[in-house]
Image 1: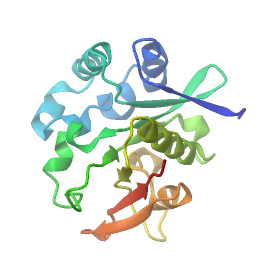
Image 2: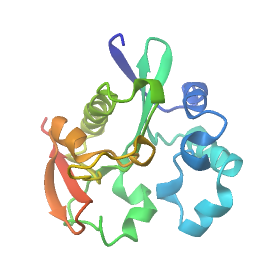
Image 3: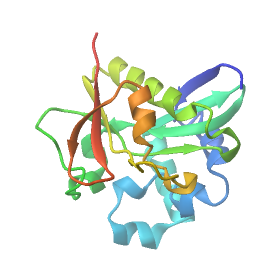
Length: 189
C-alpha cells in the first residue's frame, strides 16, 4: 500500500464510498445506518433504502465519517460523529455513557477485504481523532470487541478490535460486558 490519505464523506466523495461499500452496502445492506436506526427500522430498510438514507444525510451537509484512500481508491471507512447522532448507542446498556462529558463516537469500520490486517483501521482511528480535534472535540470514544485469545471473524469486526484501539492510543474507561469495553482517547490542542 502507498501512503494512506483520508477524506471526509461529502457529496464529492460519495462515489468513492458507494464503490467501497459495493452493491450490497458493505455488511448486509447496512450502508452505515445501523447506529442511527432502531432495530426495526434497520431490518425494514436494509439495502437500497439505507443507501438512499445515507445519501440524503451526506447531501444535507452531514459528515458521518471518513474514507481511507490508497492512491485514488477508497479502501476503508470509519464512522465518526458526536455520540448523540448515533441513536442506537443511547439505548445500549453495554455502551451507555460513562459520564456527562461530550464525546465523539467511532461505532464502526469497514475495510476492503484485500486491505484487512494491514493497519488501515489504526490509521482510520488516528485520522478520526484528528478530524474530531479540528472540530474542537476533546474526547473520541469507541466500543470495540475484545475477543480475548480467540480469532474473531473479520466480517463481524465492524466495531473494531480492542488491540486496534490500543494501537491508536485509546484507553479502556468502562466495561459492562466481558467482550465490549468502552475506550477513549483524550485529545489535546
